[in-house]
Length: 204
Image 1 (cartoon, rainbow, N blue to C red):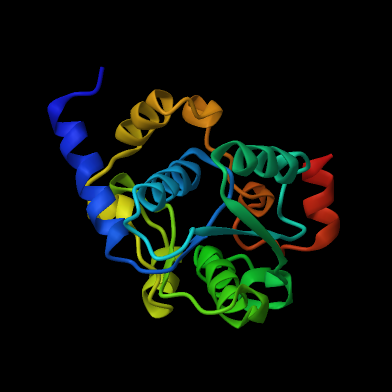
Image 2: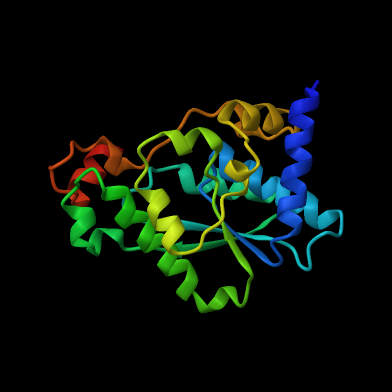
């Protein structure tokens, strides 16, 4: 049973999503972006959005084997349209050099690719799954989100990782207890160049 505080946060999220117009969600198949996709679909089904939300997932050498298929299955369960795009963050010198700001270059490439992906058509808001706990961590990707005007409704409504897992469990999302699954590049020590052969070795 959800607490009154959590119900209030869920209602705040619904209201926030209803203000976003046509929605595209940067989706990974993890619990945060999956719950955001579910919540957006619920908001649309309650006739508070002008069109169904869509999810966009990036495929690149840093994505672990099996993650794409699992994310596809989850999107199908949620009922949200999933668009798969290819990103080439490894072409960025800043990404390859693997400084502590690597995630900035990765997210910049992701958001830039989404915004230039003509097949998506027009939309009003690009959203990500950043939660309230993330705001206290060192996350260079948040700077990229700010630069590309990406909204973080989970964080804006004060939803923590624990909150999101509780809501995802209540919504019968299978990923409610899924461990964090950072990209393959996160396993490479800072300063050691990110190259495809290293990523494949980690994946294997």
